Amino acid sequence: MIKHYLSRAIFNIPGWRTNRKIVVIESDDWGSIRMPSKQVYQLCLKAGYPVDKISYERYDSIVSQDDLELLFDLLTSFKDTHGNPPVITSNCLVANPDFERIEADEFKSYHYELITDTFLKYPRHHKNFELWKQGMEAKIFHPQYHGREHLNVSLFMDALRKGDEATLFGFSNKMPGCIPLGPEVEGNAYVEALRYQSMQDKEDKLNIFLEGLTLFEEMFGYKSESIIPPNYTWSPDFNKAVWERGVRYIQGLRLMAEPVPGQKSKKHSIYLGKRNTLGQTYLVRNAFFEPSMFGLGIKDPVGRCLNEMKIAFSLQKPTIITSHRINFVGFLDQDNRDRNLHMLGQVLTKALKRWPDIEFMTSDQLGRLMDEGGNKQGDK
Image (cartoon, one colour):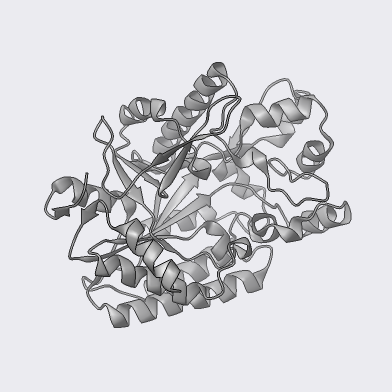
């Protein structure tokens, strides 16, 4: 516990500071396909794929209408010092693979469908986008951009064309990618959407990401001022192109990985308030609420999150909580959703009691506040 406290304290030292008790909840993966259904989950187990050993394959899927309504009911039951409810910065993918068209094209070309079309193919999801808009109006659900799809298109299509057994199995069950068979439990490498293998692949990945930004604006009616690169993988060479599309803030963890073809990724260290040469500002997550991610080994998700909030506030930092969509999904396992919503309620209840002057914000709201310069700026 002491070691964790010291490491989090050191992590929070550099960068922007404020006396205000600001809380941002950043949640990735909204809209993307992961495990399509309970039936597919069982088929994977029967075929020998250890989907029960990896949290994303075990719990994550597109949230249902029930999932959204229960999450929204919980959020609207709390208010901050200004009367505002907690708001989820919902980092969205705007598309998924169109499996039917890809198959009809005999894997010659990749095709995608918008998430609004994907919702219509799921049994309890037809009103999802309508509920999203209701959440936006209630200021509890605020979409920002995560990517076009959570899929490495070139890697995926290459594996399909080569007849890779695991990838074809996943494709036949409408899964974007797969986890490989074998004695070692490995994750789905295909979700690393922006990892590139060559300079041409790098250009293609950027074009996909930029196309997604356009689709986001068409879908939601506004530009996404912040982004979170899938799997925290990003080339600084992409910064100018997204700046020109209105991106001013880059969400992430303390380290960002830059792909280097044929080599290990290059790690870039960032901190809250750091700015690149274009003036884009980095937002760094400094608290975890990830109870579904059993691989992290967090035994007390509520206690850990509250402790990390305490550390951040004691060092005059906003709390930026990472809490992926997986934590709110009950479509595959209702207990996963119910258990985690109960714990989220505990976090919010205890936090507001301990710090009654908490202010809930979105990522881009915090970014704009930092740009206004009305607070303290730490080490640069």
